[in-house]
Every structure is written in C-alpha cells, then in structure tokens.
Image 1: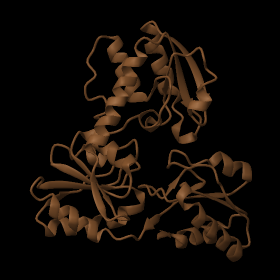
Image 2 (image 1 turned 90 degrees about the horizontal axis):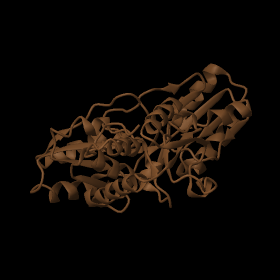
Image 3 (image 1 turned 120 degrees about the vertical axis):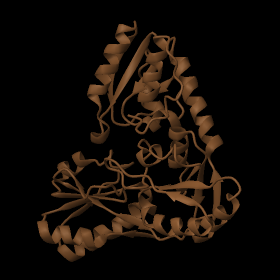
Length: 333
C-alpha cells in the first residue's frame, strides 16, 4: 500500500496558512490523493483541488493549473527528489510503497551468485525506503553492493526515466544492476545508459527479470529512427510546453546546426506530444522533440520522432561521424 507523508502536508498548511491548496501526482495515486484532499478540507476548512491531468514526474508539475485555481501551495505527491520544494509554490511529498522485497530479493540473490559478484542497487521514488533492506539481503549472500551517488534532483540510488547519474557513475565498478520495482521503463533506461546487465525485482509478482535484451531492442528501434530521419528534408523541432520540459534554448541550438547542414526546420510547440497531434504537420518528414526523451524511445510514431540524444546522433551522421554509445550518457537531455 502507498504511504503518503500526510504529516508534512499538514505541517505546511499549519505554517503557511494558505487560503487554498492543490494536489497532484502520478495517475496510480489519484485515488489516494483524493482521500488526502478530503482530509485537508475536513481538517482545515479550505478548498483542496485535485489536479487530474497526467503528471509524469518533477518535470511535469502543472503549476500553471495551480496558478489558475488560485492555490497558494501545490503538493506534488509521489515524485520524491533530493529537494524539499521546487520554486515558491511546489512542495514535494513522499509516497512510499510498503510492499516487501524480501522474497524476490532472496530469490534473485541466490540465482545470480554464479554470474555476478559486484552489484549496484537502484530504484524509483516509491521504493527508495527499501534500498537498505535489500542491500542487507544481497550482502548476506556474499555480494559486494555499490550504491551510486545522486546528483541534481536525484537521491543516492535513485533514477528517473531520463536521468541515470547513480547508475552511470558506477558502470566501471559493478558487474550488473538490480532495479527495485515493477518498472520496465526505469530498468530499460538503466540498461541502455550503461550497457550493463540489468535486473528488475518485481515485488508484486515476486519474480525478477533480466531486461537487458528488452533494452537492446529499444536501442535498435532508436537507431533505426535516426537512420530513417537522415533523408528528411524538413524537420519539425518540437518544444515541450510543460514547465520542466521547456527547452527552447536547446531547440534553437539544434535548429541552427541542422540548417547549417542543409535541413529546413520548423519550430513547433506542443504540450502533449502524441501521434495524433503531429498528424496535422503533414509537410514535416521527421521530428526532433526536446521535451522528454522517453516519448521518442518508448512510443511508436509513423514518422521518425527523435529525442535529444537521437537528434545529436543524427547531426553526427550528417557530418559523417560515428554514433556509437549515443545513449550511454548520464542524462538524456
């Protein structure tokens, strides 16, 4: 069950005395967030708005909605980062899953003994509280366990879908990675950014899975999209309008470089980058979006839709330069 840090919410309301608040978080937490909003209204007698739009992470906070609603505080729930707050309005609220990793960790530790000696443990926001317990289990089985240091918004052992600092800095020191949680999304990102064997511990089905081959297939798909974009004469450069994904400067840099290489570039701004939305741009042969790299790598588009690392790789190909290891970086923006 997800445990939301309601104490921190109540303390913030007590201290700041807001006239109203807003709450948001990942889709899977919306029902629990509604319960928290009910408790706030009953306890403090102020409006508590639940922002129901999708919220993919700390890059997708939707403070604009909170501003429109006149909310004095926006509680972002379930996207734990190294900072307590972002800006003047947003307070980050932890939400940890109390599911046990005991059984699946012991199964994985027993099975992998013949294959690996040194491992690094990684996880997402919801399972950061389990790292110490799982580390202890693997050490019981004789493993050397390395925990990568966080950087920027990331805590130690934490990864986002586009940031892998704790994994990246450990790649020369470990044999493999073990990700705590039921997320192919995060696990595949670790494998692609490090090119090391990566295992996902699923505490709900009590099984572990090696995701290395799945990640290789995603990487092949990403490479294919780059080569398909080589012949594009007109490229659409998409700037994401979500506040944490707004990379206008990066887009303009790419535009200048591509135009020097003979490409025609159309600047496009979108909040949601989907196949349905880009169909209206019929004159465009290929796209590069600077909002979220996983939009390009994980999703299907009929025309090439490149992320920033893919766009940089495309530029290298146009300059007749090699593109190996273009995803083997710590931050895909």
